Length: 91
Image 1 (cartoon, rainbow, N blue to C red):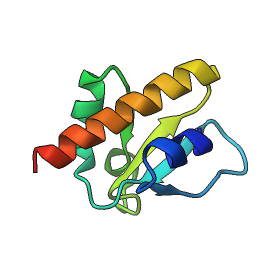
Image 2 (image 1 turned 90 degrees about the horizontal axis):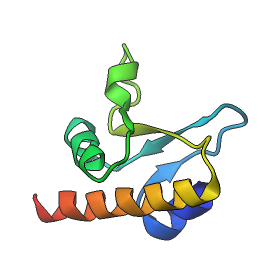
Image 3 (image 1 turned 90 degrees about the vertical axis):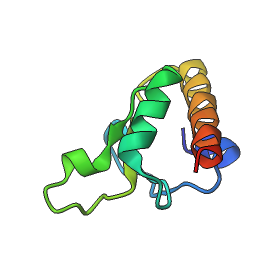
Image 4 (image 1 turned 180 degrees about the horizontal axis):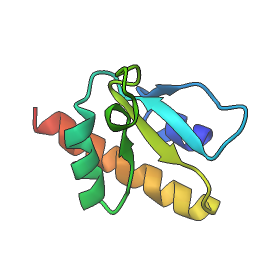
């Protein structure tokens, strides 16, 4: 997933985890609650990091699962890129 994100959405940043099945992605000031809805319309379920942090330490982050086959991840990342393009255009 790291390679796919760097290829399709290079503005997003993240630290590769040492374990687990999730990637925390900093989406650079994007309203993640609104973006989560755009992604869902593209068929991708992601979690607004703000919902998962009582201290708001992951504000402007999404939690993405990467426990799917590579083909599914590639499709999902492409759909996230499309949602991001729609998000940028709607500002």
